[in-house]
Amino acid sequence: MPYIKHLDHESVLSLGEQVTIQPGQIVSKTLAQNRAVSITLFAFDKGEEIGTHDSQGDAMVTVLEGSGQFTVNEKNFLCNAGETLVMPAKKPHSVLAVEAFKMMLTVIFPVE
Image 1 (cartoon, rainbow, N blue to C red):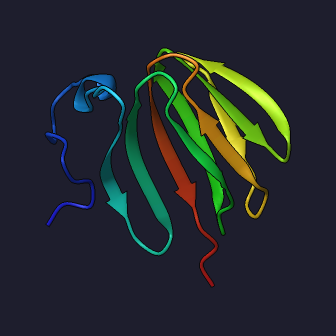
Image 2: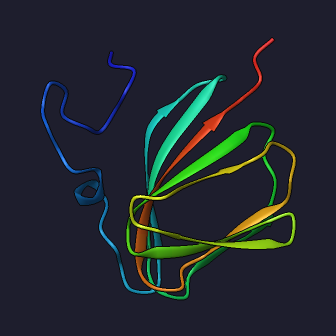
């Protein structure tokens, strides 16, 4: 059983092509998840959002296409394709699609 799911192994591919923007929706595809790490691709239609929440682990987003607005601890960040933002564990954060966009979310959880 592969550790990374839903992607062809030993194949060059575009992560942005692995999720499709759907009207009025947020689409997600989990690539890996265990107690230490979670890797998920997301596609947001313009105007869609994930409300304020927090995480037990550090969350790193990498925008693959388009632009998204991330609010971390009440501070706004606009991230464009190719840019990355780290949202520290236990700090409130949210996501807003200022335009249709795609991102990869990697969360690293504390493992004791």
